[in-house]
Amino acid sequence: MDLQALLDDLATEAAPCAAHGKVADYIPALAAVDPSHFGLALATMDGQLLGSGDWRTPFSVQSVSKAFSLALVLARDGEALWQRVGREPSGNPFNSLVQLEYEKGIPRNPFINAGALVLIDRLLTLTGDSLGTLRDFLRAESGNPALDVDPEVAASEASHGHRNAALAHFMASCGNLENPVERVLDHYVRQCALRMSCADLAKAGLFLANHGLRADGSRLLTRSESKRVNSIMLTCGTYDAAGDFAYRVGLPGKSGVGGGILAVLPERGVLCVWSPALDPHGNSIAGVDALDRFTTRTGWSVF
View (tube, rainbow, N blue to C red):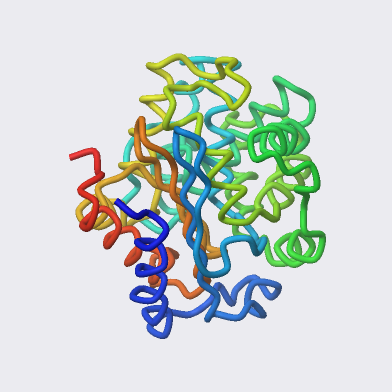
């Protein structure tokens, strides 16, 4: 199979779908991003790195970062995490207050905003620097030492983060945060504001396709823990449209409102697609379409 030709075809076929979506305008810095951008990268287990379109252009990773936070917490804390956050699809918007109150401050899963705040809180306790730990890990796995936070996006998100602050304060009132709310929120917005390209993300995610083994051959996760991260990505990784994503794409995936989607091909590699125009659930329209076409054309899915 000519993978480069396939990626080029997918970019041509999927990119026009962006016309049907809109950028995440509730974060001013993201509202200014050109919705016509489209990039697609594939990092394979045998060392290939291929891409098409804007695959080398950095963008705000937003919630894609949560898959890496989950892996880092599990690597250090194991099953203890699941006393503080669930593993079920939310069925509600990623920033829902109603569900969190109903469930007494225990987020439904680690990928909705409340769950990610718990991840960051725990990583802060375990390492003293959640953002720094994540950034160092991503730099090492991607091979990009310049990878860093976009200060403009971080400031924009912080100034419009009232809903996330409400989620954090409510969890603190329920005893489900260990660190000061303001510190957790600071690390959260800066983590979401990390800038990476499709190439960076595809390389950084390869440990999830390789049963928890990092780029240098060291082990981050056990095979079982890697399986668990992938399974939660499949069932919870694309907000309240995870069922539709599993139906169409058939891969573990994690999306972000910056327009990125990371998708894992177990024992084969990792795909990352970026197109900033989103559907009402917060997922890239052209990105989902490209991943759907990829698994349909290749037959490479988990099913």
